[in-house]
Length: 530
Picture (spheres, helix red, strand yellow):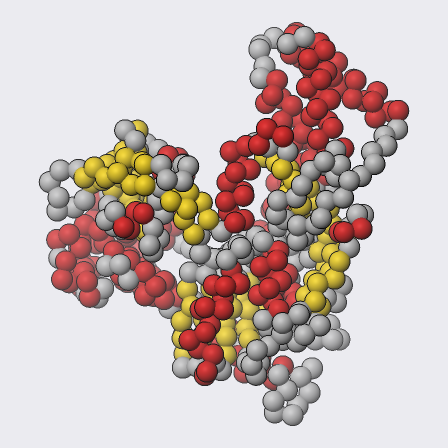
């Protein structure tokens, strides 16, 4: 590469950020609704061009004189990412592949066959299939082992690698070789990739008479419709709702605002954004409001509840519409606007900050901290186990740390080393698969009898996965519940399997116990809700 070409490449790299608002259209934002892009007049000081020329000179010297050959494109991409990383922990540069995956996620779909896979007992097993997906329609079942994809062996590959092999352009075929217990030879299947809806609402059911449990794992373009359809059968006799936002990383802002709108009064504030650009300063109001008499509402959060999920929790808390139960949320309140760039690249740039309706900043403090230190904040907060102190208006005091503090602190139960060994290697699933093959009728009942437990002891002992009989016995409730869930999943009873997982969950138990307090917020008994 000539010096002139290197300088030109460097110039293009540095101008990425400078030209963002001049000639880029916004695709979607995890922070703001796609603002209308207005052409900006660019004006830079002379020093800008001096810095740009210096960067090009350095790049040229590195490219021509460094001890080993370098990938110039990769070096430029890394320098952009390094620059963005100095701004905040969430501004990011995406290569074409990663940017395409981001588009698919925010759109609530992707092209593939619709399976969830993971290594289990040395094999790449299908843990579940999406309802109505090409995988399900072609006959692939939970418990099948994927031996190869388009002739590429899955041996020694991570689950993410196999998923990447299965995904591809819409309406293209993929050859999948399947091993199934009870079938002598591997099954060769040709599956046509389709656009796979990625549901953000995996579970909604009556956890108690008149009380509905609803789990949201993300916010995508389909979330609002999913919520409406899930609650529709219960509307006539809905006496309480537990909204589970635990482990929800956020996603599409407009979807979160739309869901919040369903729980608040018309014209109540949902979110405030503040930034330097005119269109980054906004106040989002509820325009729809209740479509029926409000019911008691409890929202579950934990340290992995982030971004758009924190907006929903914060709006409900500030409006005194419901009780927040669980642990301090993550504290991700920087507004990223997604910009498509030339060559299929993309950029998420922080353009504003989020504030709850009462002005509480959601973003956790990241100044003078590395990204690793920033991410470890959550771990340190969890160890402190702060009590959710109440301010004069009934809200948690502003701590300066950001995030949403629960009204009722309910800690999660940490996994023991034994539980972690079983779950991380999906060994209970692998055992349930083999047990179902030997005793199909007994397995279909999902009853964890002494026979099942005896077989499991032998299975784990052969793999040296528990240290004593006492260790096994001490974990019996966990083993029985998890094994029941896996047997139900293998019997294609996915939702029932998920319900079993929630049995005895201390945070869910606390959420149900908090419904009477949520009832008081509605003021139905004539008392002061404060």
